[in-house]
Length: 528
Image 1 (cartoon, rainbow, N blue to C red):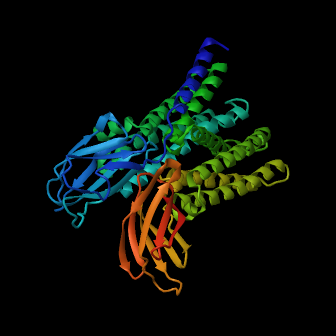
Image 2: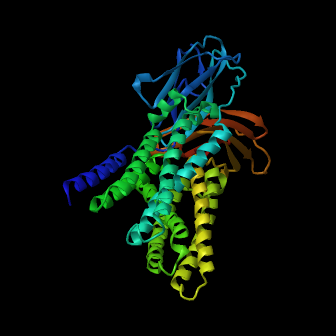
């Protein structure tokens, strides 16, 4: 191995190790705020600060504060208290008595915008003001989704097409030079175009703007400072480097460079999606993209080159069939692992957008595997099977594979199911002679309305002499935190639960039925 070859390979994989050594990221959630949600203050605060459980990127007007009259009372200039990238804040003029609304929107490290709101009061409580909602423009979201799908297709055409040529034993054995350059060049073009479009539009998507935000320098600069933006730059380097090695380098050095730049290319997809969660997800996502690209792109090469004369390329078809089978195995393992990591609960599979999209993807994958089985049987019986059967089977396999790319592009931009899932809690608990019914209804991130119903031994609504409710999170040594209850009718009490972190909390209800009798019952209270 020459020194140039060693340098190329070592440099590429050293870069990947640096990426894998990055800290673990997930979907950002609020860890705390000052003032605290629902706080009643006697003195007006001079600023509002929100603390997250990971570093976040602030969009324009990341924190907006509305006074009791509904007008903005913040300075508009973002603060980073203590230079901490996990905190965002803004100076406020909150001298008027009443309730204030804080609305925020930031971008978590996994490239997803997250937003929320809470209230606090100064002097006294009043009706909470309303604020215009900031949501991502639908048209812009569709364009970004299309760009992601085009990027996946480009990776498939470039990597899968190159693989098929290698299995054929050289560039001169399949198709014409013009057709080969056209297909592989289309792959490079798709990758570059999709990355540039995403770079120019992502900032507007994060800030909740429309297509008119396309290419705004301040927004593009913000994107380049995120893991998502750096991933797009890595993708451009990988695609252009792969193309240069493919067409400008010869011999053993070309093979090493193709492997190195191919690894960089697929790693970039992990950087711009859920793969940044941790090192294991990074590796799994990279492998998933790699084998999907080799498989689907190889199918495109079959349709473009080999299936025009399958008898002359029988050995290539057989080799690709074996490689495709290995790819399917890796896809099943990595896809199953990622599904488990992103869903985690059965209810989240049908109760979230991510879960439902995942079910659609799984259905398409099953159809692809059926089509792949038919085409593999055709390859095995190529001497007897009609050519049309093989072409149709491979064509259907390719079209369904492209549909999977489309759904995958949507999944990459959808909040993971485990963080988007807000389960409703319902339980019947026996507290001595009384029956306590709990009903927890999520009202947003890390908060829910808790309804407590008390029934006596005659199964009629009962009013206990005293009742307290607390929540605790043993894994984080938090609590017990008291929950303020208000009477909403005979035997019916309502309280709002607002917790600093997500987790599997426990609610404890203590019911005093007489001067000496007291019963405490507990129940899991998952809060997302």
